[in-house]
Image (cartoon, rainbow, N blue to C red; front, side, top):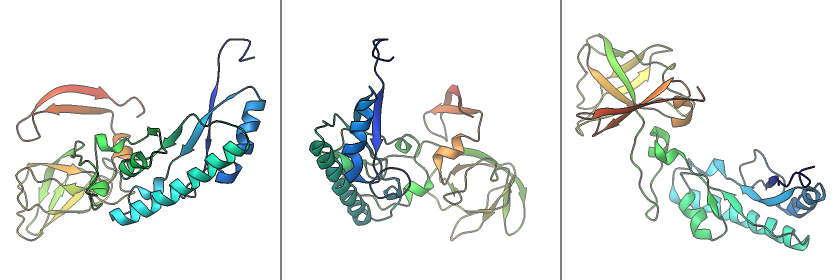
Length: 244
């Protein structure tokens, strides 16, 4: 029916390159590609994403994981070649490892996305010398709503930032020490003294770097675009979060 309509449906075969989530064994790629073609569909290439490697902390760990992924990609290519099927594209990679996939010469498309915002968890990775550095661009605005002698309370709890990758980090506008963010529940965040950090005053604004950017965006109706920095910038646009 697709052929009669003059259109084509591209199909990618996902292989498990070490994440252990989705994907077939690399050696089965050729057989599945032939089945795809037998149904009049177009085999467009391989999906080879190693999500588990993105937050391995050291460059050596991430490199080892992608070297293993590349080995499985080559096995899938061999399986396709044995079946007489060409592989137009291999797609995958992420913000934590894309420089490694790009350098391999195997991946032709990079699916990295978190680099646009970054988050606290990505910042906890030890940066690789060969990879570009990305700055934080996603912040949750919060305000001190209560002030005690030993702690302060913010109006930003778990309902405003995702915690699957841990709690947010308080952002320092001037490089000075900042308090530590503590678990205050759904609607509140606790600020605890740390080193030389001074607790903020009642009503003071603080900016939080969320632990995980993707599901934090999903918690809000809008993103407010600011140009010129958090301290002295101006609002340039307001974007609705369409997948809220």
